[in-house]
Structure formats: C-alpha cells, structure tokens
Length: 295
Image (tube, rainbow, N blue to C red; front, side, top):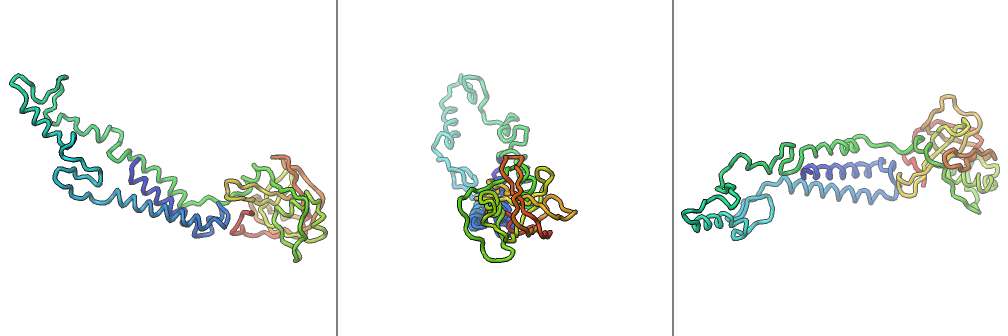
C-alpha cells in the first residue's frame, strides 16, 4: 500500500477520534468515563500520522560520495558486493582473454550495462504498481472520510428490536429516592417490576425516559440501550406502555413517561424475557438526550 496513503489515513482516523471525543458525539459509542482515553488515543494517532507524512514527503538529503542518494534508506558501503559491482565488472573485463566474450556470462545474456528497453520493468508492471505501491490504495480514504464527515448515530429501535430485553435479577431493592414523580432508570424500574413484583414501587409515580418502538402483541414499548463499556456490548431494556398514548407516535420518538406500576407483563419475542408494563398517566414527546445510553 502507498505509504503516503497510510499516513493520511492514520491522520484522518486520529482526527475523527479527536473530533468525536471533544464533542458530545463520543457518547454515541462509549460511556462518558472513557472520554480521556479517547482524547489521548486520537492525539497519538494524529501525531503518528503527521510524523509519517513528513517522513515520506521530506526532501532527500545529499548523499556522500560512494553512497546512494536516497531519502533515508540504508547506505551501502562502496566496497560491498552491491556498491563495488562496477569495479568488479571492470576487473573481470581486464582479466578476460582475447577469446572471452566480455559482457556475457555463461548463459549468453548480455551484461554490457546498456538499456534494452526493460530497464524500468521493475518500477511499473502495467497495473499502476509504482515504487510506492498501487495508486488504488488512495481509495481507502473514502470510508475514512465518510466516518469523519458522517457520524453514525446512537443505536436505536432497529438494534433494540433484534436484541432481547436485558434484566438484572436482585433479591432486595433499596427504598426509592424522594421526589414526585421519582425518576428511575429503565433497568431499575423493569427489575423492580419483574423480580420484586412492584412491592418496592408501591403507589409512587414513576418517570422514565426512552424511545418508542413496536413490541409484541401490537404493544408500544419504551426502550433504552444499556452499555457496560461501549456500543458493541449494548443491550436494550424494554418496558411496555399501557394507557392513553399520542396518535402520532412512531419508532425512534423519544418520550418522557410518567405513570405507575401495573402487574401486566408480556414476553419478549427475541429471547423470551419478561417485559413489564407501566400504566401511563402522562407522556411528553422530547428531543433525544445527549447521553442516549444507560449504564
């Protein structure tokens, strides 16, 4: 692969990582606590890319006598087999007798040093492979530029619809915090509703935030992706909605739902996990939060 293309790709990948980690965009991929590590990784990639690009584009330094004028390749001593090739050939010519064929070896190939039309064959094989590699390597910049200019969004209803609901089984639950309504994470409410059968929820009004998606038996679900480290391990937590819902509700629409515990349940068609209901008393359409994942 062209080394200049490698350096540019390294530089662009580092720039994309820095751009994401210095804005809220990184929250679409990892937990907030990983931001410093992303900044450090992006800076290292940018520095490495700049250094590699400088190394490839720097002018060749003048070569001392007897050494090749290259851009930093290993110097070959004048007395070595390569550097002394001309002298060795001259010595063989002087030692050749009148009947010898100077410039030819035992197989009859001409080695008189003249160009016979194929002297540059090793530089280009007709497929664009020059000394630096195939020019088509620059096409690898296209997906990197796409990643830099068009950032993938956070996982939503498409991913949630193909993954089973995640619950964490517990035997005891702490008392609910103060407030009316009390805001809970999706996982906290779902775990209390399923494993505690709503005992720790009591008659309290609960507030949940998530995105809408279609569920089993024609129900609407409130869902949110939960991550342990990054989007690669994201799993959805789902809560079914009962009660009066907006007529214009659609997938991916973010909602703030206020309601109370109900004993209704439904099975997730993906993994058979229990999905609890919440009896909706009030629902508001909201913009997607900056931090779309729960942890």
